[in-house]
Image (tube, helix red, strand yellow):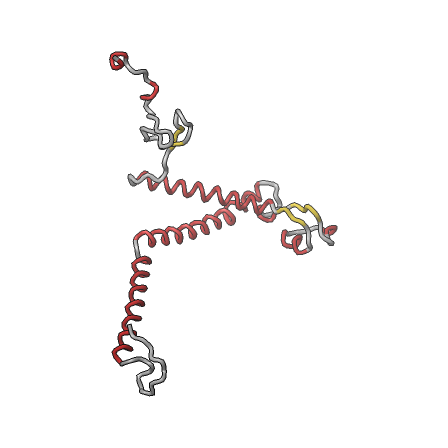
Length: 195
């Protein structure tokens, strides 16, 4: 490893012993940068990381489409069919009025701007319907995927007869209490094996 000189020398080697030491130091820096860069490339383009990134992007786009479907397609007809007189996400209740509460509020924003305490139950119901819609849509997509491939996404579970914890329906032994699910543990030993 090259070492710095104390600065008492007045020659033109920039504080290093020789030009070879400077080149060695630059090469060592290049190798470190190359090693870090190669490690990053190996990590970033590894199969699992790309699959996760693709899944996250797809999930965010699917959620945006489902949110728009619920807010723009499903809720407006519900607002017309039910006597809501407004879009569902604009429904609210005033818990404590602001200074201008005697005139009433037409929107949640107007009530909040006036300083009223507002319970925006319509916005919550909008989000709840959106959540249920996304959940059923994802379940449907998983069911279709599982139908066409042999990779089980939806894992069916049953309760263990002995410890009452959930296990896979295909399990022959419980992973929690290690009891056999076919009833072997309940059978009485035969008398001829005891003697």
